Length: 68
Image (tube, rainbow, N blue to C red; front, top):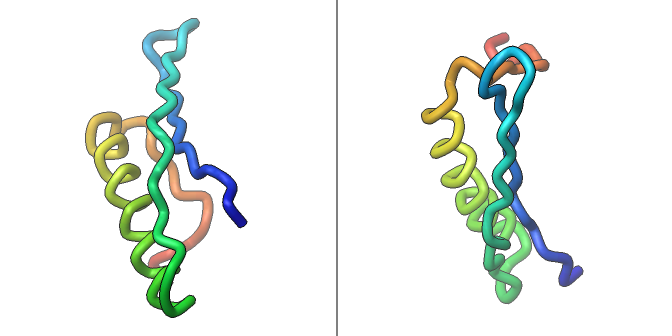
């Protein structure tokens, strides 16, 4: 417990170059019901993920069959 969660993303700029961004650490909630904390903190992470996925949708790949 107590480790920082630091979102980081990398995407292709062109054939030979990539760009990486390291975001500010997420301030995770730690007090309360474990199940509620997991849901709340996952929502915080998903919010960050959605931003960068939308900005670079062509770079996104799902490696797990989530539709079945």
